[in-house]
Image 1 (spheres, rainbow, N blue to C red):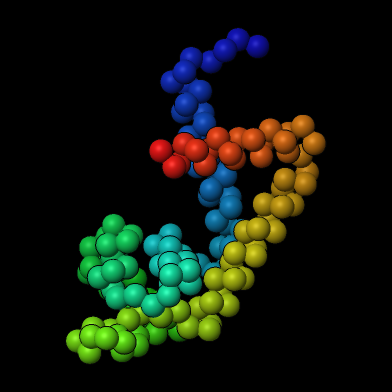
Image 2: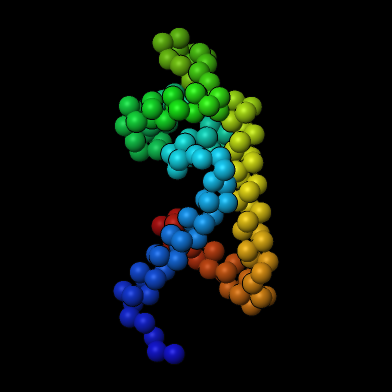
Length: 142
């Protein structure tokens, strides 16, 4: 099989990664969370309560955009506003138990889909995939 030019192989890789990510996300589509909503819920779950400004900085969006995201999550009962523990002028956003349950359910759906998809590969392809994962992690950390 002839080698593909570097640029073509790179584009093929980008498209393959994009397809995998979209398929991975669709496994939890029943929760209908946007990428930003998912990222905010993940951040709140992992790092704990934060101000809207802190979340906006962390996700590289404008505070107004984050405010709209928080409002949508709050309307669905996934997050709640709490008084800031040290600064009474500020309000923290926290994940509710309902939000945590939705996040865990979505996370489980994604993991289940991926585990089932990987299980359908032969042993050689699974090992290649795991090695590729290590390489992708190194690329992402650069």
